[in-house]
Image (tube, rainbow, N blue to C red; front, side):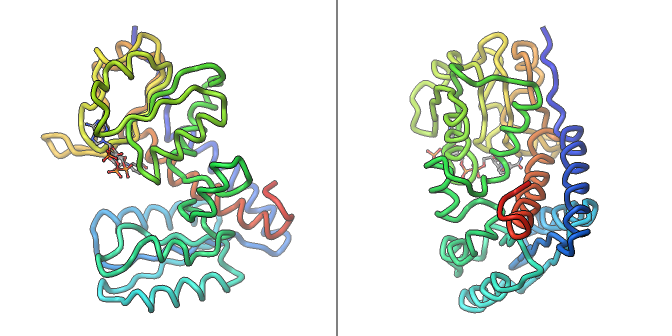
Length: 287
Ligand code: NAP
């Protein structure tokens, strides 16, 4: 058996077309959805990420502002900048690219973002809303994973989902989203003694670790759906995920590739969240 690919690029294009159309409708009412991306320092990976995010906004007809600051920017000055973006009516979403330099408390900065503009979904208000099933912004990467499952009409009710990784930005919100769709969810992490015993029970596996080959074919139940969030480099320096793709695709029913899987979906869901923030201003709720 060879698994079907869930193509994150194709799904992203489809969703971005919808974002563009809805953004156009808002513009006709005098509101251009706007995203501010704040980058502090010159981390090369962060520079690529913010460039991609800003370009995706422009391609979808969203207004975007990229603010770049020297790594020496003080925490107080960054807080002041965030507050002025909170007050800026042309900005509906604020993203402060992580990681921040060590002298800045990232959580303090995230908590300074107005929850109504927290399009990354990292604010405690957003986390609390997800946990309690209230409306709020969902973190983009797990939200993108949920859209991928939706794209294959996968009904999570009664299914067993295993999430590998428990970070605040991927693993934990992923588990909550799966739970909300009535899956039975197991969260695994670095202290999980026998990962294979867990993953072999899973109908859906989400790997969000950041280590190559965390999931191999012998750890996957035939027919399982496998979503690979990881971003790593192989020995040749090429981008790869956490999953042994060649092996696991022989066992799984659906699998996401790296690159071209969850990565593009993350940026797409940022656009979706920014649009939803602007629609909430315009209509009182997302369309
Ligand atoms: P993270 O904060 O480093 O969390 C990694 C998690 O993996 C932790 O919970 C850790 O457990 C767990 N873990 C580590 N080794 C393990 C093992 N051997 N077995 C089981 N669990 C293990 O990373 P993250 O921010 O969640 O990101 C995870 C990966 O996704 C990274 O490769 C990152 O680059 C990628 N990512 C991709 C996107 C995208 O758009 N595609 C977006 C975000 C992140 P402990 O909690 O016990 O330490």
